[in-house]
Image (cartoon, rainbow, N blue to C red; front, side, top):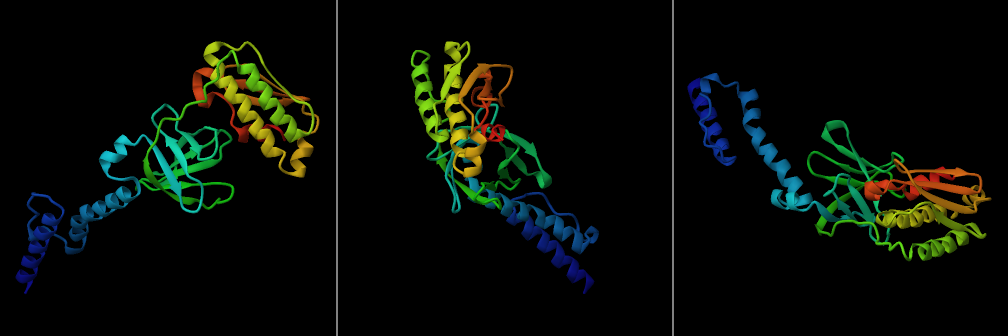
Length: 268
């Protein structure tokens, strides 16, 4: 009876090895502990299932390597493009012009959290390949799936010769949100930095518009009359009386200007 059981265990080991595609001969049955070694033999099968789950979410391994810039859909929430081809992950929601520069950090169980510049978690990637989007409307998270490749995210082009015109347009939008005259100016703009300065003006006004959507927010905006944009070692934003001082670092690209969320926080 014992000999028959050992033969059965040895045969089962061979069948499992064939199922997972290995050609290595299993250990002799006399040295196997049935409970421990069956678990060990089943591990490749479980890993194979995990890979299949990850592949269903993000596609096959070849596709994952190629899709550094992908378009994603979330379940019941917004769609977005995630660009991981550069030094910092970038995200842009469909229907919005703002590009969010994210900062990845390691979490529990091998998860990776992607945070914006005020520390809010925007995305979570699991070690199994799952991706979850977090928004103010869905703080519990929305599962996401990739739908294909997308073009890299880049700041909108701003010609320095027409940058002043762009500032005038954004000044009008900011004034409408505040309900008073408003002005945007810049200090020492270099031609190579025009894209960053132009986008910083747009994003700063986006933050003002966001704050102005509530009565409490409009009270926080009271007395604000202008935005001044200047270059510095890193992105920053602070309010100084009637002026919102925005600092940009053009060498950092999209990560070189404060987000609309950071602008909104600076406004109180």
